[in-house]
Length: 514
Ligand code: HXC
Image (cartoon, rainbow, N blue to C red; front, top):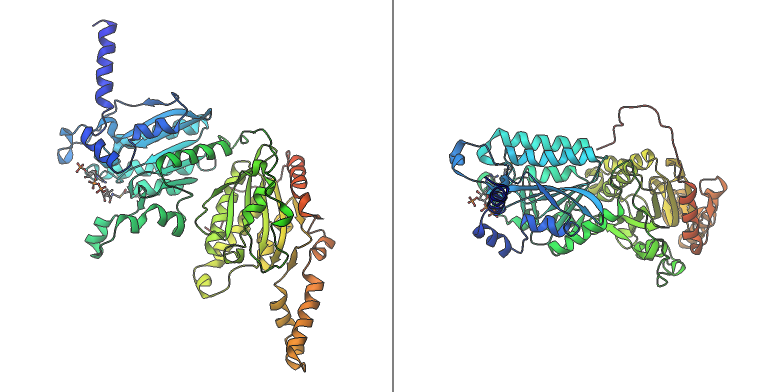
């Protein structure tokens, strides 16, 4: 056979393999508002940059008449491409082929591209659209998932791992994403659960819709499993591209530097925070008043909104922001907000991203619900994460910094490198009203006019402690600064921290309160 005929043969084979589950299955997929697996990887990567491998892989299952079934590419696409010029490895499960279920060869394709990503030290993006372990392949499919979970763990903290949930994902198809760094979901399309409605009906005799069980909103607002929520696949891909622009390719690199830009003039830093410590405001406006171009990329916006996390740039460099949000629950720390911030801090630390912390909180949320939900254990994660982090850490105390909240929010005592406080800062064991009621209880009760005495004692306490100067007098705060000076000082702090190195005791690893 001459070369021409061989090439013709290749074309024919390719054409067949590219069919996925066939026209009917593809029609069903698109009718649900879903792109096909190939359309997804192509639209995510830079134009003409995606290259596919293992197109001709076939499954080897024999039981349950599987030997009579052709599963093109065994239900998954793998390849490499670039996003804004950054190299990435990708896999995308093809639901049109046996529901994207994971058999042995399907798993081998995924682990092949995972190994490649780790070896080349580039981000891994997995598009999950799968019914989980392929039932007909038994323990081989379970083994496949085990191999994936192992590699997820091995790659954790070395390369960024991004999961996109674009279909009904069950079992292993959600546990692998749970081991990765970022999970993206799309309204109405993404579903995540360990056991699907069918199993629930069989085992518990209960009817529940996939949406209520584990839809995109459930995981963005209730469980915190998802980090980014989009209304369409196209919007989701734009979010992924933006994330890739903010994070380094691997743990030996820094994120790409962009052209520095001043914040937008509409964010006037001295006009955002109200003087009255009980008045709420949106802390994201403070972040936008200090970051380049006022461009703040928020993570887990809809979950545990009493703390805000995300990326912005300062002088063109990526910075991770952690900020109490007085707009939600007065910005208190609780179980979920501690988990949310702690994980983000560990990500920033693993990937050389300096952290800026903005503080304004009344402390940890009191009450039986939080105590029983384990606020001691979860809250401790935040202490652990900040203490362990060796990247440059800058803290700005905007207003309230009470009690454990003061310590936990990147205080000097957990080794913040720079601690600035605005003149409105109040650093104390608790708020003036609560404190006066406790330490002056006797005087207040015995006074002729207890109300007047209480007010007097609250004022006494406020004058003494509700300011930044007691902490500044001990050197716990490095500088009391005007709000207008914040960006300038932070830029300087980042600049002089570039060569930070810290020596920690030798250990295999710590035991964080997981
Ligand atoms: C084999 C599967 C499959 C699976 C779906 N299919 N899941 N085949 N193994 N796990 C096939 C279906 O038979 C069907 O084939 C096609 O994919 C499309 O599935 P539908 O059910 O028609 O689609 P839909 O109604 O949208 O429902 C999707 C679904 C449901 C919710 C994912 O299929 C489902 O519940 N699947 C099983 C989920 C599950 O329990 N997986 C195992 C998890 S255990 P045809 O030929 O009819 O088109 C696991 C182990 C690891 O993953 C756990 C680690 C901790």
